[in-house]
Length: 115
Picture 1 (cartoon, rainbow, N blue to C red):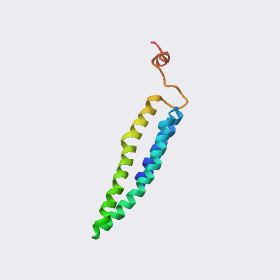
Picture 2 (picture 1 turned 45 degrees about the horizontal axis):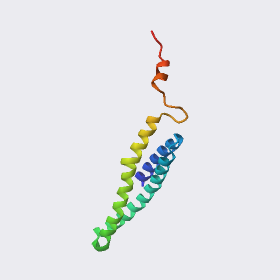
Picture 3 (picture 1 turned 90 degrees about the horizontal axis):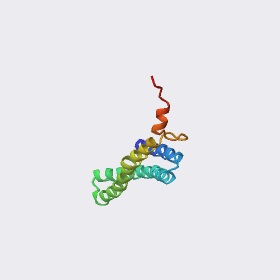
Picture 4 (picture 1 turned 90 degrees about the vertical axis):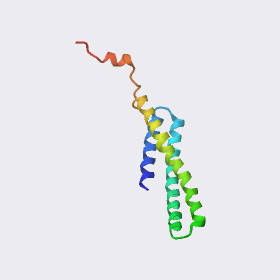
C-alpha cells in the first residue's frame, strides 16, 4: 500500500529529526506510528476483502468485519496525518536544524552590517 509506506516514511523522518533534537519520547511515538501504519495497511486489505464479499451477496458477517477493520485503520491514519506529522514537523522547524542551536534575536543582529 503506497499510502502506508509514504506516511510511515514521513513519520520515521520526523521521528529521526525529533530524536536528534533530544525529543526521544515523541520520536518513539513516531516510530510506533510508522509501524502502526503497516498494521493499517493490513486492515485495509482485510476490509477490502470483506467489502468484496459483501458485494457478492454475503453481507451477514462481512459487513461487520469491514467495519471492525475500518475503524482502527482510520484511527491510525488520522494519528499520523492529523497529529504526529504536523505537530512533529512543526516542532522540528521551531527547534532549528540538528546539531545547531536555534538562532536567537541577538545572534541574528550580530550578522547584520550597518550601512
